[in-house]
Length: 471
Image (cartoon, rainbow, N blue to C red; front, side, top):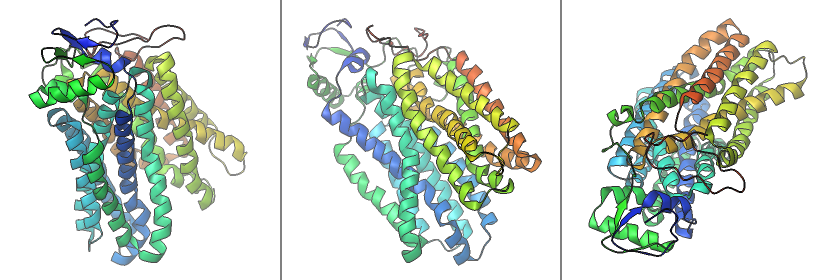
């Protein structure tokens, strides 16, 4: 079947699944799958915030200092890094849907168990296991949403699902504000674990598996589902029709080594480095921003609000950048975000935050820093989903996110050392990270192409570098 052929009955010939999904309208059932995936990310972000929100009560009850929790947060980041790689690999081997359910059970189950913890060691072990589940979610949801969405709305759908992480954190803050004063931290953890566990049933009943995974696995029952899914959008395949799930891909089987095969090696290394730098930038501010403002003489209220201002900029820019990628391609948009992050950080390094200067200028700086850095981090998942072919997409996104988490771990140590020197030194680090990320994004060969007004949509082959797409 040629890519230009309209939907209809397809006899015994090769069928290009990539082109069909790219061009197909978004069905109601597929939309529900995307919505369910986004809710999973909300619950993921919710549970990941509970320990930080409950820290004052836990430290008081267990009679330990808050500083004693530093290693617990570190092992949590390590769990996130391992979970992202593991979840991506399992998603390509077992399927996106069952692994998503497994991830929920892991992070929700350990959240419930945290409610029974009586010492720091137990909290640390459970936090590390919870991190595995939380980390697994990102590559699985990214791959599933990307493979369920038509090309024209794919960037926006993936970015919108990633924006659900701060939405989950915001929801966690609102729920904690109601529960902690009256019911305490243990009840908060029970609620935080029970709700996702119940939602696993909904995921099992209504979430659909990726049609690419089903076609690639190729079982008789899988192909029956593929034909039924394609019939929903007008493609009626006969039993003899051969479906190609990964057109022109030179990668035969999902593995970490496959991500360094010649077809994708250059893009993989550059993409992993950009993930590392973007998370280094984001978590340097998340971890040390409030302390920076407190040391500079700002009151505690503004120090706390700085994170909210930063996050707001990131949420708005993520949606705007995803829409821009659909129109202009990922190379231009992501490079602008990276250079914007570096330049804004340089501005803050030169004009350091000072409570005696204009608060309006500082708010603008924080909005821009969050917009560029957090916006870059969220929309990078869109690029990762495009770089890798379907049979290693989950593995590739997972490995990218895993390397990125080590940027977050680095931020926890490097930020402290630089902040001890001066706030300017910390912002210089952010500037270097942003500008270096911009250079590396130019190294990536396979970017999603622009779709200019009045021209037909560019349909990329699923070759992950075999057919180069420049934007």
